[in-house]
Length: 136
Image (cartoon, rainbow, N blue to C red; front, side, top):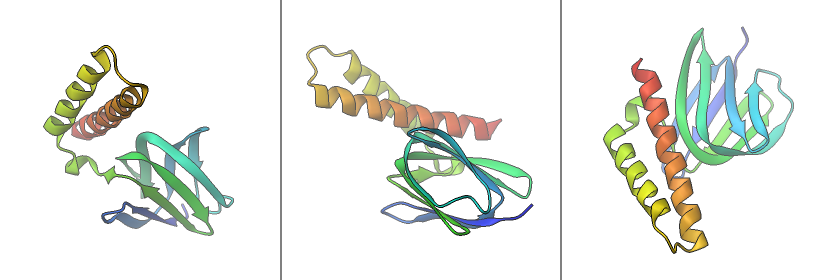
């Protein structure tokens, strides 16, 4: 199976750079499957996992939104955060989940605080899901 270069970059570091066979990302319009030769594309990404398939082995990465660009045989993901399963601190993610759930349960929240708590909960749940799948 042919390959293309996948680069995943956050403001802090380059998280991933390798030739891969296939990726699945969750764009704001739905899931995208990318193979070598995909048409040029730029799309915003949702908080979700990014599935990467290389040489028959699939792995997932937790990303917290950002953008995906396909240009030639290079796919670039610019994400706020991106973590491989082994980098995820599950206890920290569980604590973030509990904090976000408490904030959502409080009454009298301003709309912006409510939205921030919802996003924090989505990020925590995504990190927990990716880490637990990798443990199986």
